Length: 459
Image (cartoon, rainbow, N blue to C red; front, side, top):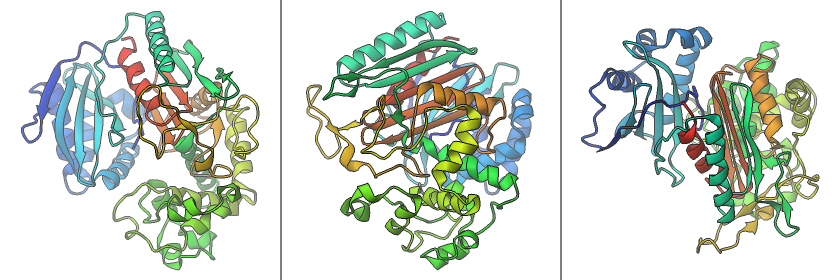
């Protein structure tokens, strides 16, 4: 759910509002009425109300870049994931943005920031959605800095202090108007060897790698080598669960509405993880299990589904997944330092992960353990590849320039995150800004930093 439909700096001053369900109400302003209309359309049956909402309230400039049909496709994905939404709290209301907490009927909480065009009546530029299920729902008040220089200085002070307190380790890259505002590393890539993180250090991205799998699938679709309505069985006739092979489409896999579960679990914990070095090696962890629900009927996060997508890519491309992505995505984008590495053969300038997993957090002095035992032998199409600040910036630029594309994301608004024990990363791109935070500590190290960075971004 860490997908951003737009990233636009928040303007003006926050108006704090401690309004909680069941009495929560939107502000009685044109901006509040717009967001109330969105919630009504989201919860309505079908999608005609949402189409009418976009026609009435959508920013004309944004509609040119992101057509209504693309917005409706995103709405369908969100609807499948979230079900119905209930307003819990209005966090802040601006002329140019409203931020609220919503409760999903599928379980969980999310923070929605509606970015608005300051016209009369207001128009919707985009929506940022953040998952609040990781225990970091605390709101950081907006405090935009007067200039990029002061923004960079505030972020640097914040991250240096967090690193001193062992609450952050990693690297950050901030860009405004195509100019690098801050590029700096903090903490250690290898604590035992006292090797510091550097701006060129490679970090494990976790699930951010899923966007490369998404792009690869759409590349093959544009080449006519697959259709999103194709079933698994067309490409993987020996898939262990024949019910899934006959019912699950590639579209289901992309949208995480397939009913295929996760590969993490008891089998993963019991097996020697060093053997997981190919896409095919992951399949026995989940592929024979029954579907958790009828495909398309609901949504559930599925690492297993993205493993299946990787296997389909390999079948069509006639090469291993890793080679396909490096040739068809990394090379065109100019991502020279990104790859999947075997965990016992990490190259120099690669950060080791450190985690509190399975241990209570006593306090700042409580030491983390290396995350080596939690890692597979090699990452996969579901995540676990490595990249750098500059490679991810090159990826963002490739998306903005149309060198790479996917209908599920666009260059004007991209926001993705990844997290696992000893791994946390965010990549956020708006029309005029890029925020990249990579960390080799547990979530929400990078995500918490990202929230503070956004709060301080100048007008």
